[in-house]
Image (tube, rainbow, N blue to C red; front, side, top):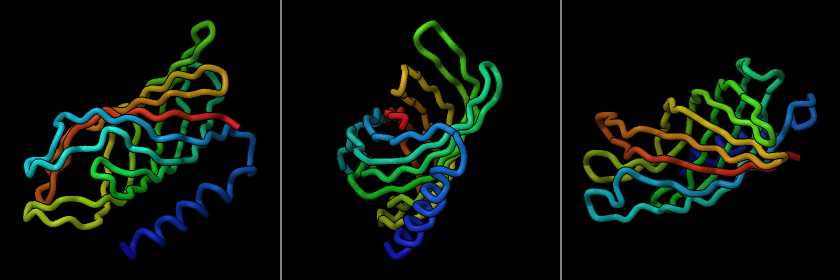
Length: 170
């Protein structure tokens, strides 16, 4: 747990020190709903579907049908209701459709999560990954969707999940 405090401070300084550095859109993120490939762990622990949390996002969109970069930081309760913080960045392509925009891309993330090891113990560990991302934009509202596949890391494994969270541009 001692590693989380410096990580939170770093994420805070990294994200909020640049709030007014340029005219890139900024969003407050609200963490939301997760659909897991399994409803429970093999020890019977039920997985939390509602992963409430807050985040901050910047995107550098300039032109439709061109790659652009987005990054965000999020602090939420994970699938076992433990604090989980992560930083994510993605490269996406955005498309305009009458009243809405959509984007598709690939995102990478780094986080600190209370992971279950093969011996059954839980410890906060760094976790990294890549995942496809999709977003729908309607005026100032954004709905983001990502799928993180389940992976066996040897000492611990993850259960795949589909994750949705919303954003509001300010």
